[in-house]
Length: 255
Image (cartoon, rainbow, N blue to C red; front, side, top):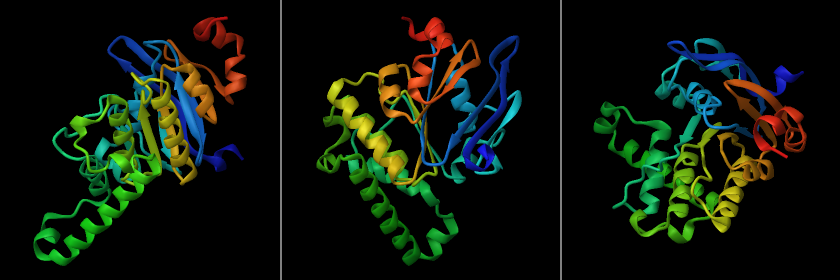
């Protein structure tokens, strides 16, 4: 039954860099339309796991399966075409462009036009641009940053820029949204705004996988939490169960 429900499945996932084992035999199942947070101390393997799912690294062992299709080992651009969008820890926005224009970049990645189509079917190209604008507008509304849409990114706060980066990823209308340290550097109100935006993305149909150092943020937001320690999974399950796990308390959270 678990296999039927799992949208993202990691099976025996491992990664070695020379003599260093960064990830070892990790199993994880993320149900469709849930938010799963991966936590652990520095060097635990969180970023390595994330990069394998995103297509940045091939695994040394095991596999990642998205909705029944193996994605591990595929290049990142191919993974993206399968409905996976990633918001990086470094926001990498275009400072001179408006918020709306930055989000449009994500919307236009949704279906890149072939050059020949763009040249020979200008009306089709215009229609694609309109559809991209509509996707961008929906993402901006979903994240709750409509009031920022006309402003240059250089004129908004870092916390607001992180919301823009999330909207840009959502504009691709992903089936799986990957968020890399989304709460890093944010203050209380900004974290609350981000939590609400991620929750709305889940409610709109996205499955979310995030890696994060902010334990309280993860425990409040996520439906499911996994904990890595020295490259191995030491716990996963509902937030309350993970927080009370003796292994997690001793290795990471503390008493």
